[in-house]
Image 1 (tube, one colour):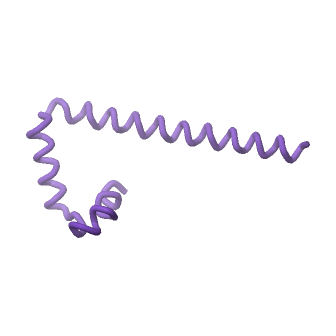
Image 2 (tube, one colour; image 1 turned 180 degrees about the vertical axis):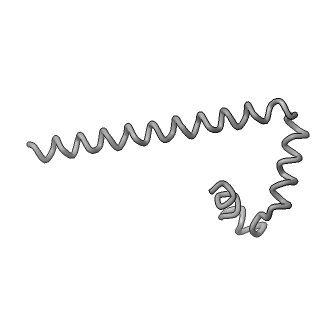
Image 3 (cartoon, one colour; image 1 turned 90 degrees about the vertical axis):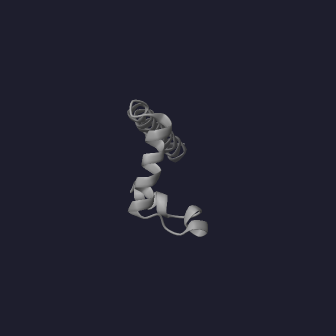
Length: 74
């Protein structure tokens, strides 16, 4: 799923699809820039952000469903 996101547009429009070698080079550069200790922290923060986003989407869906039921019962 992550690889599909990285190989899709708009990056794919300009550079073509990213292959395994390109992704490994990007990962290597990230390790060099941020260091091996910071990478897990970055991914942990990324994961927490995704969880928060999913939670807010679920809450939003519940609120919409409640509003729809409220309108139907009126």
